[in-house]
Image (cartoon, rainbow, N blue to C red; front, side, top):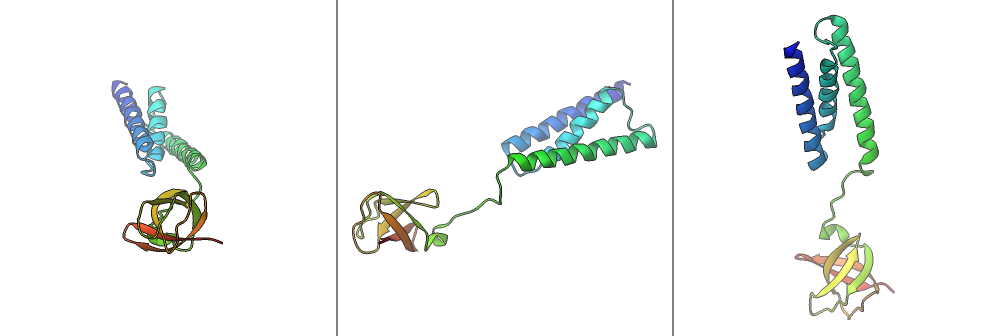
Length: 150
């Protein structure tokens, strides 16, 4: 009985540690095994001896699968839709946005908002005032080159 109690607490502590890891590092997908460990640990602490008979193992596996399915369902409900999107300056060519800080063809002091992110920019030919709609025509180094959309 003491061994079961200790093993139950060990499972709960390890499961909780995995959930904390998942909270600080989303995508590691430690939530499923963490939830399963906590459920099995609670069962052991409640006196359900899942390792003593075939039926105990079957019940433990069924509960673990149910807990895993619930965790996956819950995880899919709280994470953002779609895959993470990486935006590079080269992938911005052709996209439109707004000027946040005026752009000039001679300096790279301008700022534009493209795809929800702020980028350093300069204009392709003319001065473009703040608030104007622009289109990305190319990238140079770590900056983008924009032109005003008529």
